[in-house]
Length: 338
Image (cartoon, rainbow, N blue to C red; front, side):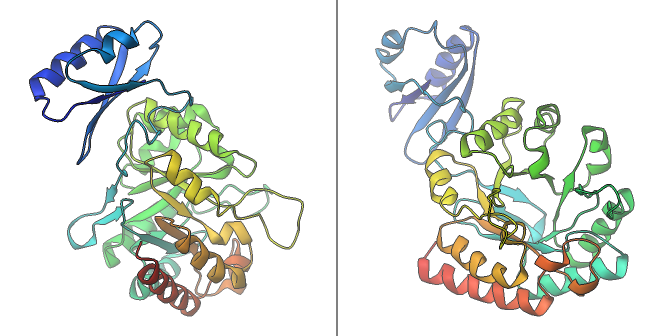
């Protein structure tokens, strides 16, 4: 249920209403926009008399929300959420018209490798670094990442370049290792690991939540709801392709998800054309298409030697190719006036 306050309502009036609503055993989420203030009621609202609430002098209108996702719902929070990471001149904003390009290798392989890539992607316009320290692999015999050492190397790259970084978590037991990570990524395989999501919801870290390979948009939003219901509202959604029967691409990039989600939720939405296609030559057109569709950012795999990459070399761009993609994406943003 949401209750929209009339213009001119004082803070004291609002606080008295919130106190009364909370006495009805519901949580109240306050969203103060430029035009109106919205109170989102979370919990069992069946006992709240909607006619009584609507009749209050300070209430403009009251609406029951039928969708099961509440905190992530745009009707709860009409204005776009903006996620901020980093500090000073390296501060990055994601959402609300702020576009972010995250770029880097699928996996951190060495100090020399991650520093070289971080410096090259920053020079080409990336404002965040991506890199895997813990790697979920289909085969137990494939490279699983440098783990804690990989996190230390990502921190070293941040120290050298100033770029905040995003990296994937595999288990809630690793949370202490991620204390200095800027954005924690939840991979497609863990999108419905609800115990992990609840633990991340109790943290104050921005979370990049990737869509599961067979997940509906409703399921993606419900996973975001798990995080937000625990108090962490810093969630970024990521469309990274869904599974199909065609073998020409790794997955099928659902670009329609971008405008659909923009209508359903206030959370930022970024697109991963690397995992969606699995083919490096397809990354550029899909990155451009995602930008034109209204995405809030991109996450792109870049490697300085893709042929010898320990993970996902086939979908990784060279630094030169990434520079071309970044240039074209910025041109499209200028044309679309996003």
